[in-house]
Length: 339
Image (cartoon, rainbow, N blue to C red; front, side, top):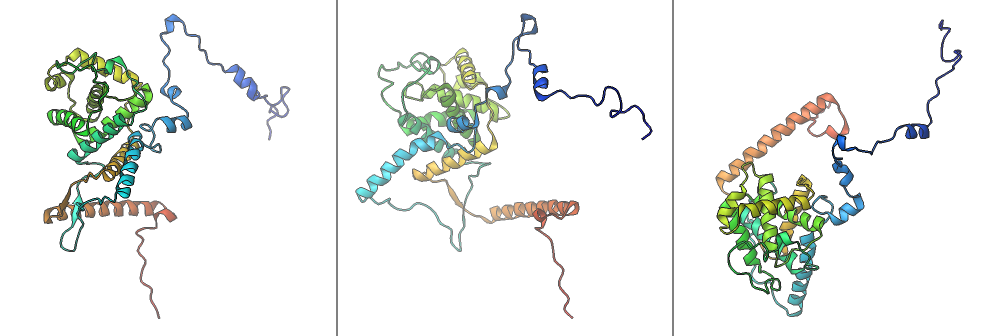
């Protein structure tokens, strides 16, 4: 009140703030990089695609986009069902097990701990549909088995015309996973990297390149997922005729084609897992069901009790902080006294 020099009575008046266009003009990014400042590194957000395009073309990056292998398999599934309906072919004996009053069957394959054998079967079946229902034969020299053979056996001239059977793909992947002692989660990440490579590099997996593409995806997935990764030289012990230099070069090209994007969000991983289970149901590949034993029942009960206690403690802590409508679960009402 007693200040005689204020913004209201001072000669200069209140300071004039620059207009928005003035601020924009005054703030300019210097994009002129000289040789002394070093190379300009583009931020990863600058390389991301718009949401609409990303959702459409990158199912390995976004959980809302449908997987490529499941859409490619639907054509064969519909044709098979249509043929069975026209020819009146019964599906055969039902091999699925159902629980009863005396026996309860449980599926040990979960999203956090998938069954290894069943997961590899589903992943190789997805690769089989990728090859069978491919759009074209686009490839790169680094993945061409004719130019970079995995064995000393002579590659036939018509090797690119014959699609591999599912059993051949399964034996190839199963051999690598057994020798390297890889996990089922690694198989799911392998499929994520494979579809990401096909999307980013705009190539197709075909008879001439499927082995090297699958090998590169397994090599990268094992290093990203497993704590104790398998070295490139270890794969040379499994595939006797391949060199370490060839493995290193293929891994380097694989990473460059992925734009070094090896991140697999949990939502994308879960989407691929459940889509693989849908693929198994469509092709009569059942996951193993085991009867619930007394020991397993006690373990499940103990885990359930532990989760209930943990949730009860969290609920009490939340209720102490606030009494919002979201935390009303677990409130015990006192009995009413009627006079």
